[in-house]
Image (cartoon, rainbow, N blue to C red; front, side, top):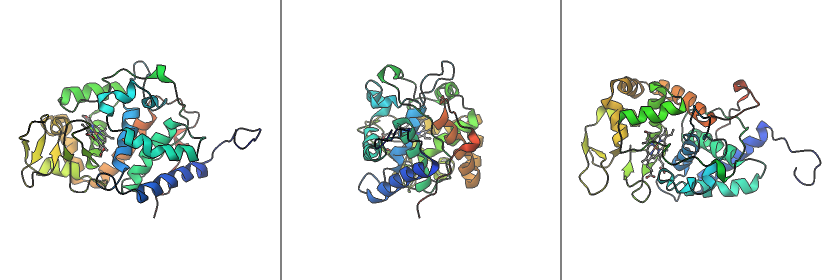
Length: 287
Ligand code: CCH
């Protein structure tokens, strides 16, 4: 109920587009962060909110936004995501009718589109839950591990090999931070542009173990400025993963299409929608 109305406010697609536009505007205005955009950390917030899903128990997932609370906000994997949550706080204040769970996922969709990625159709319907719904630590992937761990974690969410590889292609965006994960550096030369560069570099570059005191990570032979995590390298060591890496490296259109489908699926895991998939909104990207 807003402004003393007696009927509940039922937002329409146009209202959600206003939220999208506000996020896009704020992304364009606030370029004094990391490589010039909050977009990558918004993509990661939506992913970590959703990637706690367990298909067996139906727990976790984006429905709930339980990362607002400790202990979930303090889980090691979520270090640094406060930047993304704080970025969205003024948007929540301006549109108090949207739930945090819908806002965080809508922001993930908006960030992909604003960074030059594919359209990410989105629908509302998530409800915020309280602290009791926080998921246990350890549901999100550990970058120090191998192909078996990737399969364990992503199969628990309900994804197959092809979908796992497509999703991890989001590492075209952003960077690792020593004060968050302990790893350091970006995956490619344009970390604020969505592309298939992550796959192209995985296939075409030679990746050597970085010599430093930090956790094991890999660096490109040509410039020593880029990085890959052990789990990223696992994508070219494992045959089942590698065929998709090569396909996406060679076919940007296929990557954009398949990434869109699987990111939509990720953001909807465990959400009890009233609406149908065909009722998803396609937001207009800013000029
Ligand atoms: Fe990721 N990711 N991710 N990732 N990730 C990190 C950063 C980003 C893993 C580990 C890490 C996905 C899958 C995986 C993004 C999107 C996705 C970091 C650095 C680690 C570590 C964090 C830091 O220090 O700030 C592992 C392991 C996996 C799977 O095996 C998936 C799936 C997605 C989205 C669909 C994005 C974007 C970033 C950059 C964040 C930023 O702040 O720039």
